[in-house]
Length: 304
Image 1 (spheres, rainbow, N blue to C red):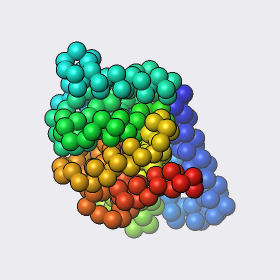
Image 2 (image 1 turned 45 degrees about the vertical axis):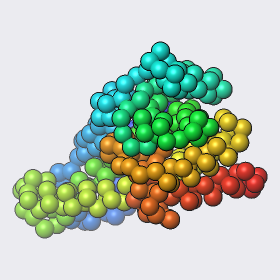
Image 3 (image 1 turned 180 degrees about the vertical axis):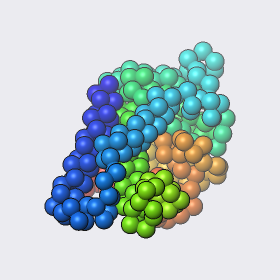
């Protein structure tokens, strides 16, 4: 709940500060510059509220629906340990890791698919940890325990909420700035009697949303890669050694498969691509497996 409150506060603060900064810049620029850029028709508060509601609102709704959407998109079935010996081990292991991490045991699910696992949910005490049937079949239990420790670290760190917070803030900023820039261009080039409604305005809005959206994606992906390193280290801490996580990543590099549905790719143990490359791109949600193993080797050597 604290992270949800932070989500709302940060979005409000960002929009408030953007509005203040823009008003200060316009005030310092003088009436001539202000008139040439925006005329008298722009309402910064209204634009800010629009960006806040649609930028934050979409991210907030997706967060609240994350568990249901994850189950639906992957076909994951929640297990309680009575289904099979494998399910019993899975539930028991997640429960033990949750007690070590001092959080409530998440729902545990299995889905049919390529070797992968993910965690999601709006609250760390009401999360979902899911693994694919293929990763269960192709990893030994020490490796699977490390994978579960990785996903539990995501839960403990509240990564689902924090990533949504980052995405929501950036969505709001993109919506706000794209409309401010479009209004300025339209006012300079278009018919002033139709400010904010012309084809020029809409064209610039879409163009700026695309360009600013690309820049925002770089920030989101950079944060996502950073939290993967943290979750790997968290697994090592939960298990008392980084070796099982190193083994799990090396094993993952030998397994083939497709990535998770797009809405879940950032939350998987792997992105379905990192095994094929030595270095992750700027738009990758995960570091390369090679870089993740190197970071864990440093942790084992006590160098970080």
